[in-house]
Image (tube, rainbow over the protein chains, first blue to last red):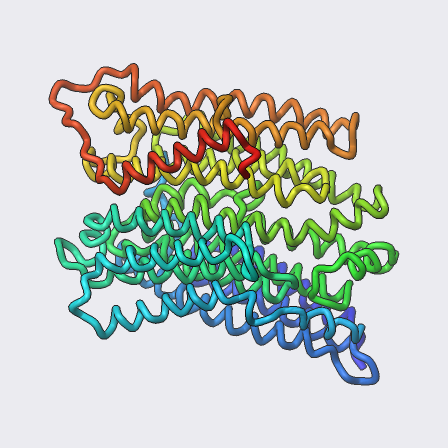
Length: 105
Length: 480
């Protein structure tokens, strides 16, 4: 059986890629994909923990329910987020975060 | 591990009645928006405000008693009244001209977010906390970018979306590690203590706490996650800025209280175990105070100024958390009440001035002392309360914050002394930037052709009531 640490390392790597991408990429669509990657990383960790906490091969289902909640909310976030990105594209013909400069003192 | 099932099943349907009421009203209004095309869109904010007000009354005493939820629903009612007061701009910015279509959802989204806040105040485990927090966040994304033809509003929406989603990712990772180290999602002292005293799990548990705090600091507006505040307050529609400044911030602090109370209990049982947590919270508090109060000094845009001011005030609230004392629940509530009473009326004034004087710089307050002496006086009381002048609620709130720092459980530690010094500096800076607005109102000569600003009876009434509340709480706080 694969030990828990492998899942945690995988989830940590996914999370770091997502966080780094969200900070350094300029295209809002790519940033958004990186954000989804962060949520996926947490899901991997949750499922891994749910298996590891279980007794006699039965996982603790609380964590898997949480994964379903996270997926549902991630889907809602994508719906709202893509709508905002479309509005942004209409307003300024581009989705680069470097063009977001109209709000300053 | 199997006991976790017992703990997570401690909710009853009844205690969520106010939430169902608010969410049900939102759905009814959504249906009315789609099918009752003859119903004027002006009625939407009014109906929603009445619904929030009823929910507030319902949570005063009895089975639904919930002080945080009450404050949230009451503030949301005022934000909805502000949306009604501001309706000409809403109509013009959404559909263009005098047409009203598409402006009903503003009230509906605010109602849904308020339902999220009330649910959050009732949460006892991380699943509930996460779902209700995301209900607020998702509604707020759409609210911030509501004026979709306006560049500023869309930009505010996108910035809020990106930073909000980062904080969601961090929060979710924290929840995963919390589950991994404690074996439950419930926020209970027993399991957290077990995790902390186990040398294998201790690091993982502290990591999960750090991630959870950072994820929630986004809502509360504390330092690592504060960068969105000035931009989003400036770009969002004014009623939405008010909502984010008061209701959404209250949600952040309610979540922080939920997260911190088990830690405070643990700290009471065995002091010293949580030294690293207290140290980290003190660092965050100092940074928040400095960024908010010093950042506010050079601001010229009034909504941006209020954004930095809200970061600064969040710093003073965070002081309650650094000591990990169980009185933090009440202290935070009082501070948030004082803050809300002073901030909401300022947004009413800004809304009216913005409509009639055309921009959002501090100079729109020019000569208000001559043209509208009564409004100028009421505004001055609000600003004085935010700065912390005696005889106002803001003074007592700041006093509690200072006393909490003095009575901190780490007396004499360098970090506590540093915190005290920073608090004094920041309170002084507050006097400077709030009174900058006061100076513009009373000492700046208005141009000859400046007209008297017309304030609707609604905004004057709300302003007077809030100022009355500030003064009554400031003179006899035992009423609280």
